[in-house]
Figure (cartoon, rainbow, N blue to C red):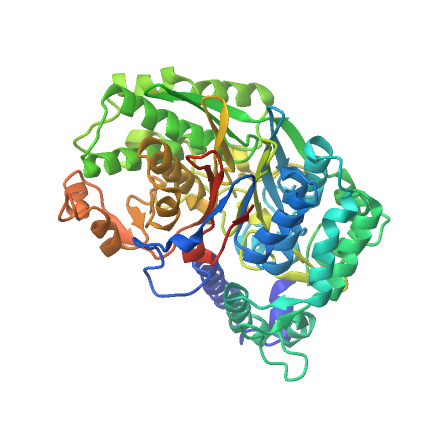
Length: 610
């Protein structure tokens, strides 16, 4: 079907499947690159000298997100008497409106939320349709990224309503949380650089080559000239505003999932028309899941910390495994000034994080309870050290760590954090996966549908290291694909202390781990944690990724001429990649207020508080 569609519309002068798939692979790579480096600047977006203006202070509350106007919109909800959960609903809807290339109600996400000492994990991950099966992409795996067959059942709205029901203030109605976002979509906003670069990329790769799609995606073009929107132009999304208004008036998310309603049948029909299997009944079958958050307790000196993160098919448990290992090592053999050794230990912790991730998926309760008990136990990390599975003197080949399966490669996302003045907090990571999701856009509702089916593993596609895909992550009806998201809340001595999360696909969990190590273990300022260059290691391929090697070496110039050189003597290898992730965080200030830092350097985000 897709081959015929693309040939008819002169997408490429298609002569055979190999030619088509080669071009689609190119498009896929470019969409991934744009998601990881949306500003498109030269390598070197991190900063070793971040201006203090990007650290925002609030004596009572703080919102940190990718989009400055959405941070402010969340703050205004708090000022109206709403709490963190209320503000999170508005911020998520706002980001999904402005940064529709990376999130929105056509996608899904994960939420960690705390209120009155109750901390919950909400799984709003997209779900495989009822007709899905593990061989549905045999021969053409790229159909999991393009068109109707790539679309999973969206979960974001169901998750937001579950958050509102469980932890909302009760002072603001569901409709009131939608009002500023509806107004934003009607009146418009000035196109930011991030949005314009995303629009340019998708037009260059696809829309300019497929005239029918170009007509549908009219909102990224100027109405009078049909040229691409430029920075500062006003963008409006009136049809999306109408859809949000229907949901607001309904008082819940049910109108979005109603198989006989005004939205689900339309989206299902569109996906089917583009080769998909999504049905209106699939929407009706969707339910977001709520459970107690995963927790991990650790101590540093006289201080006790409790980490809370999401469970299920998120990678919260993998984060816990990595922090468990790093903390055990720090307690057994503390390191103060040796930055090369500390970095070596961090890279090794990232590798054990990847090992834990290879055990995850949409699994049964018995298996889940067993792996939670294992990776959150100090016995697991101490056992690795006692058994000689770690050395200060060398790293090891990937086989040493024993991953079970080939790991999937999720892609672009958006994360935000909110703290209110009553001790409540929310961290949410939301996504439509690749740049503009499945590229299925419904002009009538204004919804961009996800391509989350690509996050499942596919049989018979072993990688170059002869690792098979994870059976835990094979496609089955009504299951959810493994995600790298890890929104995290940390308490210090019983008091809310630190919120952190990231966007950036497979690099999310290692970015959050590095942020916790820097901020909690090393007492780094939050401004520096967010701005400084980041590392990533996912075990396979067998090299460490660094955003900027020159800057990475310069960070430690006071004590080391070349930290890279020292690490290479321990058998690490490095590849410079450009921007890896975008992080947004909130940390308690010394005076009891809140510091918020959004990732201006990678996504032009700015926090806001009061």
